[in-house]
Length: 119
Image (cartoon, rainbow, N blue to C red; front, side, top):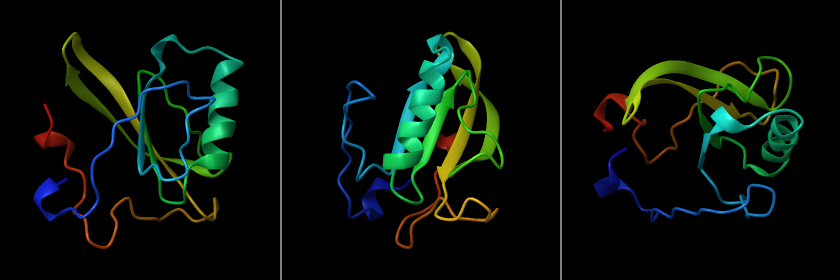
């Protein structure tokens, strides 16, 4: 993502996932390694309900989205370096129409997120 060409300010919000407002979120990052059922299902349901169309969910260690089960659709899974070693990272996107398999993560005036450029 090229911040120089972005017109939207970056805002990082830390809070209780059951209470924080996500109505304008474009990306949600979760370290899901310590989450268990039924909390994972509640979190999946909440994100499916309140995340705007096109919003991306990035989870570390555990895939929150499951193909064909709702508005959150898996986009990619990767192994990425972290401070503690490599970890599995899962990207999912909220789709307006869950049956549609192809939606873009990029907005019209933004570049795609290049995970290789991140440290």
